[in-house]
Amino acid sequence: MTFSVLTFDEKEGVFAAAAATGSLCVGGWVLRGDIESGLVASQGTSPSSFWRDDCLRFMYTGQSASEAIDLAIANDSGRDYRQIIALDKFGTTSGFTGINSVSHASHITEQNFAVAGNMIAGSHVLEAVKKQVNSDQAPIDQRMLNALKAGKDAGGDNRGLLSAALLVLSPSHPPLDLRIDYSSDPLSDLQLLLDRSKKSPYYDWLSEVPINTDRNRAP
Image (cartoon, rainbow, N blue to C red; front, side):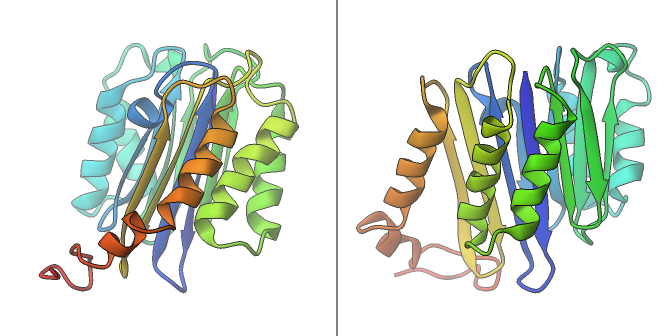
């Protein structure tokens, strides 16, 4: 169904997330983030938007990624059909994969990094994503897109891919929230959109909007 990845660059204070799926609108369904909270990816056979939003809210109030997930899923009788990973503002990560998630389903959580997938070709898909993130020297937005490409090349979603998304939150730049909601080649289209976001006039306009280190910025 879906694979997603979260990471945190401690040196730059930048959070980044990416996801791809064989269904529609992966960005809207799966990814959420806040520069003062961290990142969440909520997915699965029956993904819960409540998990996603509650987990982010718990991390904002000071809960760790693990504590936030525990609180978000505690009273959900359908949790065995869902999957979630979270990364808090300190780079600590945690995850949960319900036992009824469509195989292959698993997650990997480490300091500053988390990846999860369900209905994927195997655990090697997640390992390929991890390897790409850890070895790539590209800017973080391109690195995350490259990680999705590595996951696809390793087998990806068993159904193929129809949507993809990229989210980057930086203290010194406006948020980057790019989504391809339906495409026969969503990763190529996401690459085109990422490239376009770095060109005028859009890129020039970004220098005029508020950022975390200058919330009063204007033309």
